[in-house]
Image (tube, rainbow, N blue to C red; front, side, top):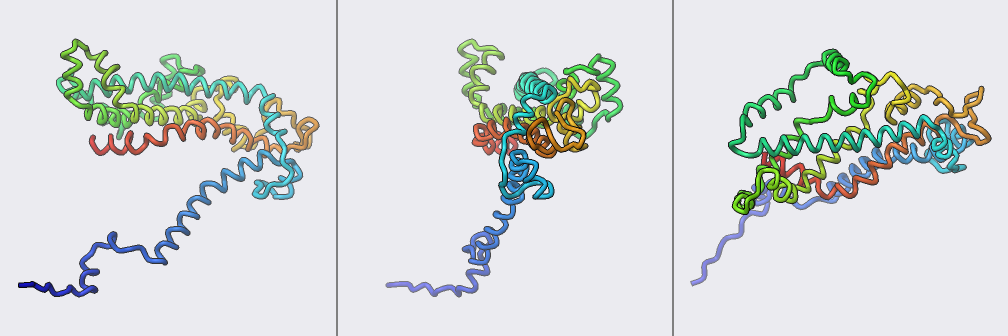
Length: 313
């Protein structure tokens, strides 16, 4: 005996399906494409104009009335001027030093704190975690921070660029969540082999947490590289300024850089026709290069390192 199942009404099936199961329409596909193109244009066009202006001659910049969008009269004279400017090169070295030292200190403190908080039964890990979380919502404020850093001898010191922001509670929580997900069997096996906490952290936990450590290290490195507010507060000597502070002072405020070779008309640098705007955009481009070089090597860890750790936390 054959049982014939009556066909369901197609219009009723469509009404019962959720919206995300519907096949995309041509209008929807076109709309998504337009939105993606606009988003990409919003990101890339300013970057393109900054780089192109830094490579343009004074004639091209004057012809464009400011930022250059179409290539015309390209030259590397602005970059030659930058690499002979002692202030820019010294600030570049300061930024690199602060980024490297600060990232190392931040990663050591973050990993040790996160590992201790991730081990059940460790001393006072719950009260310490509560205190850390409270600091995410309440801070001491600008003036108390300035007074504390000054009282500890951090004023006019490079350490004022590192220590006040050396630890991020958010990053500790992300790393702690990832450490907590480490297989207990691996840790038990290491303990049976005689490994202590330091050996377990170094040989078991860290090798299985490369994704989150790489992403958090990038977070810290980008933060240190882009910081200028601490320099504005604690570094009155411009010889100690990082590169971002130089950009803030001589690009956003439009001041002429010391030793830039600007003449009395404010339009020429030495024998080259370079506008101050091209010099400023060249400095901005210089700050983008390290992040653009590092990001492709860390980008593949982002989903596993942050999103997965956050969900498990």
